[in-house]
Length: 430
Image 1 (cartoon, rainbow, N blue to C red):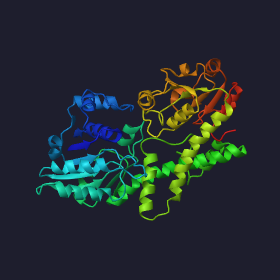
Image 2 (image 1 turned 30 degrees about the vertical axis):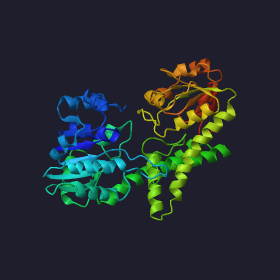
Image 3 (image 1 turned 90 degrees about the horizontal axis):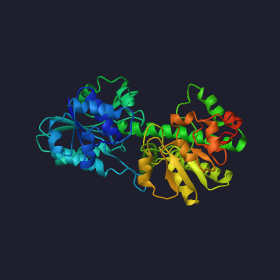
Image 4 (image 1 turned 180 degrees about the vertical axis):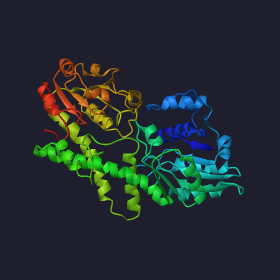
C-alpha cells in the first residue's frame, strides 16, 4: 500500500518508519528543507531508541521517501495521515491551525482514487468533522474521500515498540471502506481492534492521557500527605496498587509530569468540557497538583541547603528522550536561576534542547554526570535515567561540598542513602 504521512515529529516519523518496515511505500511531507535533508541522510532529528536504524533501513530499501511536495505524493496514496502538532493556546485550547492547513493542502492534491484522510494528531472532539468539511470544500469533483481518526498511543522512549506491539488499535470513521483500508494497513500488528465512530476515537486519546495524568497527580497528592505525617508514599502506593482494581502502573510520586502530551491534552480536554458546560474541576485539580509538585520540590531545596550552587541530573521530562517540552526540570532550573543559584546540569540526551531554551551564564551544561557535582551544595535528580540509578555514593560524597541529595523521582532507597552518609530528601518519604 502507498500512504502519506504529513509531519515528521515523534508521531509522524515513527509511524512512517514502522509502516515502511511493514512493507508499505511511505511518503513523508515536511516543510523545512534542512530537516528534510537530514532525514533523507538517515538522521531522525529526534532522539528515540532504535529509530535511526529503522529510518536508514527503510531509506535503503526505497520504501521511505521525504518531500515538501503534496503534489508528488497525495494522489498516489490510499491513506493520508495528518500528524502535525496541536500545541496549546494561551487559554489551554488546542491550536488546530496546522491541522486545517494540511487538510486544505491535501484536498487540493487528491487524485481520482478513493483516499482515506486520517488524523493521528491529537485533536478535540469534532475536529475531524471540520477536516471533512475542508476536504469537500477544496477537493476536485472526481476525488472521493473518507475521514477517519486513528489516534496514536506511543510513549517517547519506547515509541517503536508501542507502535509495532500496541495494546490496542483505535480506528474511528463513519465510512466502512475507510475502516476496511485501515484494518488492512494494521493487519500485521497485534493488539485489540477498537472500531468506532469519529467522536469516540477522538475522545479515547484525550481520556487515556488524562487518566494517566490523573494517576500521577493522585500519587503526588498522597505524597503531600506523607510529607506532613511521616508516612512513606512508596509503601502507601505499593499497598494501594496491590488492589487489582487499581494497580500501581503510572501511580508514582515525583516532581510531576511533562512532555508533549499530558499537559496540553489535560488542558484541551478541560477547555472542551467548559465549552460543553461540563464540570471539569477534576481535570483542573490534576493540573494544579502537577504544578504544586514542582513548586514544593524547589521550596524543599531552598529550605534545606545553605549555599547557592546545585548539581542537576536529568533535564528531559522522562528517560530515553531528548524532549523538554513542559518538563518539570525547566521550571526547577528557571526558578533556581531566579533565586540566584548557579547550576551545573547533565542529561543523557536533552542538553542541546536546553541550550536553545535557556541562555544564562549561571547554567552550565556538562558532558558527564559527576562533573556536575564539582562545587555543588547539593545534587538534584529530576529524570530517572538508568545511569543515575546506580550512582557511586562514595564518589558523589567526595565531590559534593555537602552530601545532600534531593531525589525528585524516588529512585533511591532512603535508608541506604542515609546509611551512606547522605542527607536525603525524596518525594513523600521521611
